[in-house]
Length: 99
Image (cartoon, rainbow, N blue to C red):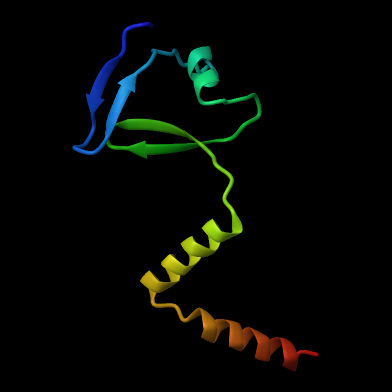
């Protein structure tokens, strides 16, 4: 489908209708070639499937660095009120006692 339409799902999110696909009898969908090429999606690659009230969104997985992961962990522990230093100290004490 060459014509694209813009849909506003929220005030911040703009989506384009790039193509229409059909669900197979096995509930599979084929990502159109132009979209696969533009997002560099190759066979065997994993995609995240997210749901919203408005529908389904496929997102390409990205590799996270150690810094990304540690930043997300730090953010989550702060929000949860978890004292990571205290947990690490307890784990060290427990490990030393088990020897």
